[in-house]
Length: 138
Ligand code: AMP
Ligand code: ZN
Image (cartoon, rainbow, N blue to C red; front, top):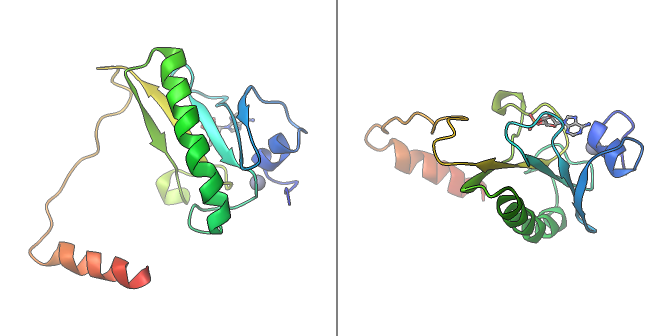
């Protein structure tokens, strides 16, 4: 069910306009209203799910095939050299709209939009300990 207090639910319900590029049973894709590059597109799952890891598998199965198709079309249509596909989860990760969506951001070589993230090196044993913690949650 859509939520009245969620902007993406309201767009999906047709109550707020968007510049739509694709729709199927699982997702609605439209241009981001505040793009970082021309063609910046949002691929939004239809159910109101806050985080990628809150939904049931059906939500993500439908999303997967649409996401690749939309990303390919965005790259081709904009003549980009590549794209970032990003899903922000939680405020710490920059999520502003609490409804699962993926950003498809067309990129050009040397566009300088944002750099690769900084790297650090694990302490001895640290990587295996983290990997084991993750495995135990799966
Ligand atoms: P995030 O930080 O991942 O939650 O990103 C939310 C994105 O939604 C931002 O890039 C906004 O520009 C975009 N956005 C917010 N409202 C609208 C809207 N009405 N139509 C299109 N994009 C929107
Ligand atoms: Zn919503």
